[in-house]
Amino acid sequence: MEASRVKEISTSMIRRMFEVVESAKKKGIDIISLSIGEPDFDTDSRIIEFACKAKKEGYTHYTSNFGLDELREAIAERYGVEKEEVMITTGGSEALLNASLAFIERNSEVLIPSPNFLSYFVYSKLCEAKTVQVKTHPEFRLNVEEISKALSEKTSVVFLNYPNNPTGVVEDEKTLKEVVELAQERKAIVISDEIYDQIYYDKKPVNLVDFENVVVVNGFSKSLAMTGWRIGFTIADKKLIDSMLKVHQVNGVCAPAFAQKAVAEAFFSGIFDEVTENMRKVFKERRDYVYKELKRIGFEAVKPEGAFYIFAKIPEQFENCMQFVEKLVMHGVALTPGIPFGEGNEKYVRISYACSMESLKKAVERIEKFMDEYR
Ligand code: PLP
Image 1 (cartoon, protein in one colour):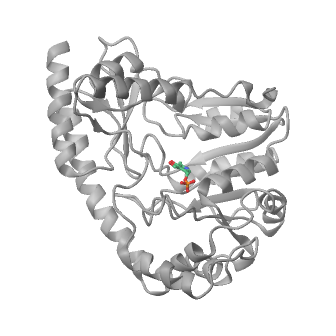
Image 2 (spheres, rainbow, N blue to C red):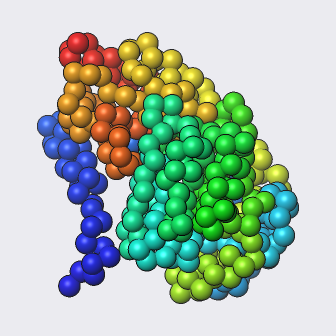
């Protein structure tokens, strides 16, 4: 029997999207996918070499639950914290689950601004909490007053994610600090998912590492194009790290040793900065292109300041995002519908520009043709 905590968790949207794309492919339609959630770059070959060398040197065993010392030190130095405040995890996702299980009390309230990364809604359900959503439309910025009203003495956790998936918004420092302080007054923990902190275009995102009630979640899936390597990390007060360790010791246990070593070497050799700088340049060019073209075609959208997504409003003549996405697939472009990103997103789609400029240009052409047919 399926446990009640997973009963309400739906995989129907993923299945539906899979079916939609598969049936278009069966009809012989060539599809450009703008629904991708990872950089289209391969991991830098030098990092792969570091990993191969590490394996030969015996980095094939468990590491400490906290992670390899040299990687923790490199992260601590970069973010200006102590090594003891850093714990390496099996990707950002493991860190998010550890933090959720450690700090979301059953029947408590979990505050999630909408739109937001869909996993947060699942964590809240897994922890048998009540999700409280605060809509941020149409600018996708936090309204401190609304957050204050939505917080209560029942709030255990607030999820924040900047640069944001799916909107690309980078919230400003003053607002974020006010939200953290409000949460602290209510004795709530803020889980600040900063996994896109290296992918920004205009202003540098804030890292909320200096607050007693904040758990920062980060990792190298996006920044070093290492989604398959499963290396994430948490930065938090030592007391909070201890609580998360109780989950991590039976959950991720430790991230792959050779992969941890390879990332540490990427820091020491300066490759980290080189890779992230290059990625920012490439993504910025694509961001500028996609934003300009979508506006020209007639979409309403907020200009992304980070990550590699744009959250666009669908034109009035379409009923909802599912209808739009299903029709567009037949014209050769796959997008992600807005619904799984929270309340109020029925009329939005997420467009990922983590694909080549050539594919983007083709996709824009197809979207424009599609729109012309429905005007
Ligand atoms: N947080 C956000 C906002 C994401 O978009 C993703 C992946 O798409 C993750 C966390 C998960 O990252 P990881 O692959 O390191 O588990």
